[in-house]
Image 1 (cartoon, rainbow, N blue to C red):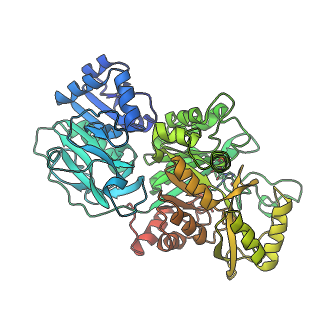
Image 2 (image 1 turned 90 degrees about the vertical axis):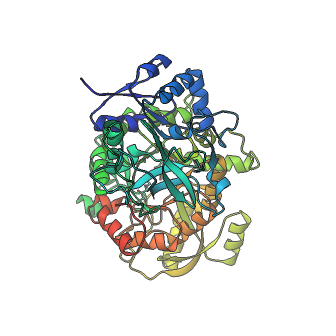
Image 3 (image 1 turned 120 degrees about the vertical axis):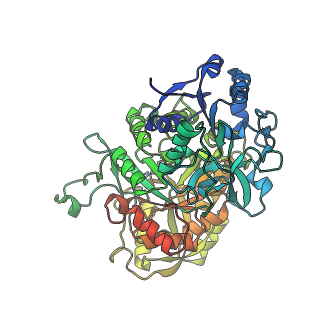
Length: 580
Ligand code: 1PR
């Protein structure tokens, strides 16, 4: 008989990744539709999604609360994940008007109420696990002492004498918090085993196969690791000229082949660069050790994304084989009667763990500043999506461009507009900067002036600039700088920043350290540095010189110039924490 797992889905979001992990372990998944089915289930997985209050309200409306308490009291096989663990406690600071299931003593707290270290919150990334007691869950295949699990949360449960009997493991993010609980056949994890790579899948197998084994439980492995820096692989996707969805990659956001690349004479536009099919590349990067995969629909400004079924089909296919976090971006905005929240919801259901908003976020922050006097009124999609799915699920993709300031008058004007002015090193000569400024003033498209010498090989000279936000894939500049944008979206409830640089994109000359440092210093949420990676040493540089939590690359991976393991090797040699 086919082995069955019941999935408790109260309809909030991405349970596809949990479903895929269960299927990968060889089980059939049945979704719980009504309270009766909880009673008859033998193995129940509860992947809580979204915010605490929302989850409890939905569970109450569906009549799931009492049957679930009875199921757990009967010591039947149960696995709660993330919010699914938090709801086992008595309550949460996230929504004090709703009670939890009250199975474990204690109230779930916000990281900021239990830590004074000025941490970036949410806690996002791969962190170590300090196992506290023996368990039949432990993998025979892998050393769980050096295991890093994937966490993404702003609230945490604190170990105490009252809940000691439940604590299976703790993890440290300045504060020690409970990262998993187990008593008999009931267990739950704050981390995401379904997103923690092959070892995470092993924990899933342990839950499904050996939890109820009557033999003596193996002793707790010893923790050896802490939070790692993340290496992210990014796929920019769009339809090519033949209409197929392909992975492409630009140079300064221009994704078409140059005349010399295409071998064609100076006829018209070059072809869209094609690095292959998104699902194949995403699968390859997962196997190669990417800590996350990000997929951006770069022509989203043209299309009605809800109609773009092809994006959803691709995402569903990717999520079947990629067991690390998946972010999807491009076109998340309102379309007539369809709200951005609905667009995002559909992506979550198709397998996304996070959604990324670009152009919409710029307009939302301008609106917040110019129309709302910087007072949030819950009208923006950023607020709405983070309320339903949690702030950790909302990434803001920033597409800034350097605006050079060559005279004191220009500096004063920029400052008067509220823009942060930085001393930067730049590889452009004064003549090139002038040509660039002329181009900026007159053009919204290609071609743009290029560095006249070989990319990245010229000596950097001191300069001043501010970082201007753009929308529609860099085509339009807006009266907002990157610092204003990230501070605005943090206020609106975004959980992470994906920081691109149009100047550095595809140049292979290294990340824009000035920009990354400026943005990371301006916010208390994690920042993913993006654009410009040309070698493993560039990752070491950005992690050594800034506080960025993650770094992303595209071109070097697509062109097979650098492998993810080379990046991680260089980071390890530089004593930076990396996930194996
Ligand atoms: O504005 O919410 O619809 O989202 C559109 C999204 O598409 C944004 O996240 C925007 O950054 C992205 N996008 C739009 N046009 C382009 C383009 O290239 N023509 N891609 C584009 C941006 C930047 C990174 C890239 C890094 C690393 N790509 O994703 O992967 O720069 O590249 P590298 O390592 O090769 O240097 P919305």
